[in-house]
Length: 146
Image (cartoon, rainbow, N blue to C red):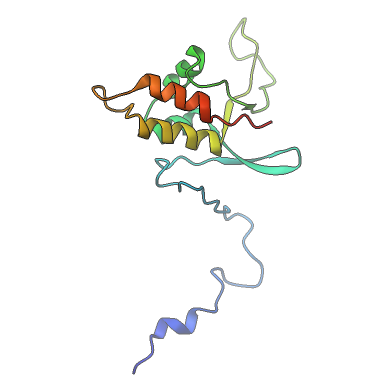
């Protein structure tokens, strides 16, 4: 029985040399998976000494197939709670008369909650959308991590 020639390479690392690359991004698998989150990619932030995967409002919008302004409007109307985290505020004033704030950041559990609620209550379908069910689902299942 002939052996598969690729079996000879199974013990090799996925990079050449002894030192792992420094510029290669680490892959963090979400419980839903990046493909299922519409390709949204979070960034790692260190909060209270531990690494946390957080998503900007743009990445949340990408996961839900919406625009970032829509997610901000949902927050403004109280359909989703305010973002638990914010990135550091810019040093300079960006708009006259506005206090500079950081970007909204959502945890992976919060993004998955929104994604699951949107899928379960068909908010993409204008005819079958159950917005009351979506809002109640978010209120009951939202994780406020601090």
